[in-house]
Length: 267
Image (cartoon, rainbow, N blue to C red; front, side, top):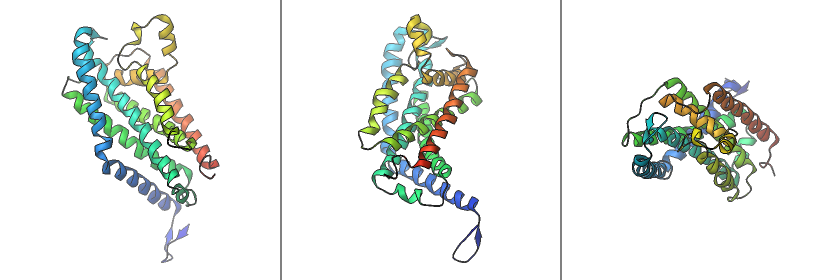
């Protein structure tokens, strides 16, 4: 128990709740304050994808997986936006806190590491899911959407957003300069996303590349989300869920360990 200036007892649970809400509100306010940078660019980019890949190229491709090409790529494009924005938000926000040297205020506060982690992750997921919603609205301008299973769709997109928020935090913790926060998105995240079945079905690939794609975790996330929306998938649903959950648990443990040890934060 702790006390306020008026000697009124305050439990640690209340302190943690206030701290969590404060971090979340700051992160969400930051996102909404620069909405022209966080929401408009993804909407414009996805519109170009729909125009070029969906309308122009898609009309020549025809059906894929029992759906017209425009409908087939919608889940992949939504998931790609969620992944990129969940990852990018926390990388820039947390590294900015390191660069501005105000992350130390959180580290010396009575807040446990899990509260700090939850606050940043929630803010990052908010941006990822908000951009995903914007992309979905844009998609409705180009094609009709039918959700096969709301439970699967929502659970997959939320868990995937959490995975890449956690991964982004690890990147931000180890980053020493601004160039370090662009290496992973450019050379790892983007290739894995494009090779994760966003624009095609892996059933069309030759055996070697199909086997190579099977080690890409984003393939399972995209296809699980596609199953939730369209009812079709190139991979079994249960293994896809298991892979996502394993990454959530593993990356959460890594993040908590790094925060506890102060790696890249107390030097």
